[in-house]
Structures are given as C-alpha cells and as structure tokens.
Length: 129
Image 1: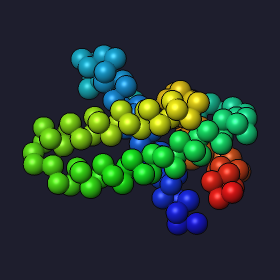
Image 2 (image 1 turned 120 degrees about the horizontal axis):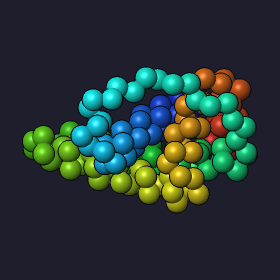
Image 3 (image 1 turned 180 degrees about the vertical axis):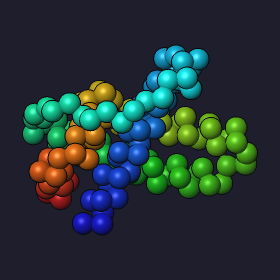
Image 4 (image 1 turned 45 degrees about the horizontal axis):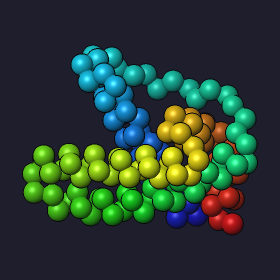
C-alpha cells in the first residue's frame, strides 16, 4: 500500500510540475500574475483503458522522479537544478504521451483521484495487478 501511495503521490506531484511548466511555456509573462485556484476536477467517467494508461504512466513517472531527484540533489547550482527539472519534466511528459494519454487528461485523472476514493481504488487495483 505504501508503494501505491508513493506512486500516486509522485504521479500527482509530477502532473503538477508538468502543468506548471506547460502554463509557463505558453505565456511566461502571465503565469506569475494569474494565481490559479484549486478548481475541482470535472466529474468525468474515465474508461478502464484511460485509467490503465494513467496507472502505467504513473509507474514510469515514479522511476523518472526517483532518478531525477538524485540528480537534482547533486546539481551544482540553481541553473543546473533548473536544467535537471526541465529534463525530468520532458521525460515525464514523454512517459504520459507514450502511455496513450495527453498531459491534460493525465492531470484531470490525477485531480479526480484526489476527490474520488472509489476511482482511486480502481487505479490502485490496476497498479497491483
């Protein structure tokens, strides 16, 4: 169960990083001026395939996160840390896209998991099988 919690936590953290980076890349001048409220995830029914894709991407993201956390800790300065974070973000986006999801759908599922214990249970069962 600890592994599952770590998996989902890392996936959600990574999703937040991907989302923040994507917003910053789209309009860097507007990002600091527009605080984003934590909006509830839209009520959606996700297919078993989408949830399995989320679970698969999450497992890959955990591996990437662990690898890049180690690299981040050994980075020499802030510029090196930013470079490592950007590289990790790119790898995470790639993992999500290779799973068959787009980043927005991945993030939406991640947000829904935080608010829906039954959905979280479905994903946990997929990861464990």
